[in-house]
Image 1: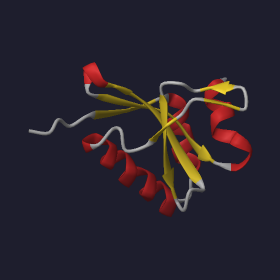
Image 2: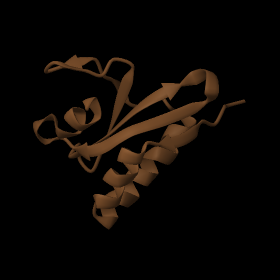
Image 3: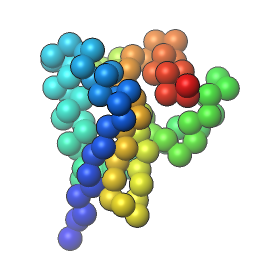
Image 4: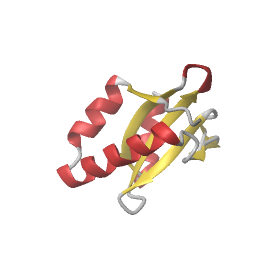
Length: 98
């Protein structure tokens, strides 16, 4: 029997999503739903350009132009979305690191 994970969004992630265009927003929601059944669908992150995001994962949306960055809290069956943002200049990672 498969376990379904709950999705929780940080305040920053909610703000990020509200700023997206409607069509991209729908794609993000679709990926978040997919994470409920497969929380390890994304790629593990580590230390990139001096930004340590070890323990976090990234999942691409919209032809890799937007990324969802999240943590999996396995013992609580929870996917915690930290941020959603554009790929350019490591923007989403810098915001999350703050």
